[in-house]
Image 1: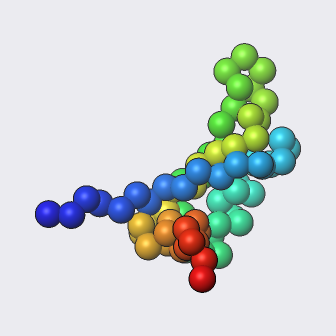
Image 2: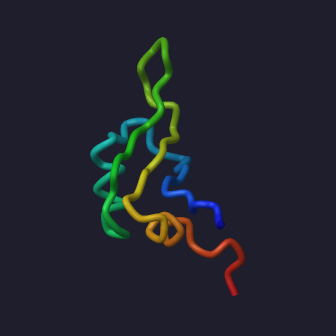
Length: 71
């Protein structure tokens, strides 16, 4: 039995004014997105500059990350 491939990716260096919707729209070019969210500071509710994108298909998540060691 093989382990399931992750279908979510970590995205860093986001603009502090980026929105969940903008993040989702950007990654929709790769494949269907299940959900996308930017992590907010608990006290200030301001962006912390990173977030996550969950894809419907794990292959799309792999394509979003790209090869770990390009040729």
